[in-house]
Length: 150
Image (cartoon, rainbow, N blue to C red):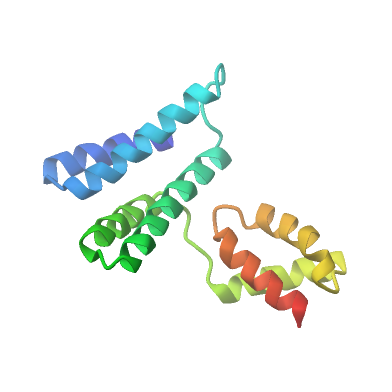
């Protein structure tokens, strides 16, 4: 079952349950998928990797919006953004814990022989590729910096 099919099935459920917040999040996902498909011009559809990146971008946008709303003291606007992010996260693979990310980064550092911050780009490239969809880039970056600076 493709991502678009899953989203459509969830939309039907949300409509029946009259869950407007979930419905809004799912419509945003559907819209992003359709836009990505038209950008891909001529391709049959999106690859699984492209779908993951798309979903991660949508979650990141909502979390950033919620953070801005919280800074401005607008909890009433921040909460729906966080709720929508949670709905979209349901379509992503289970996220790794920081300890699991550290273990993977340690393996990559030992494989590459990285010894300091000058090797950060090399380690980040491999880590981002290997942990794609299962870990946030910001968290990966933080762990890599910590490991290489110590």
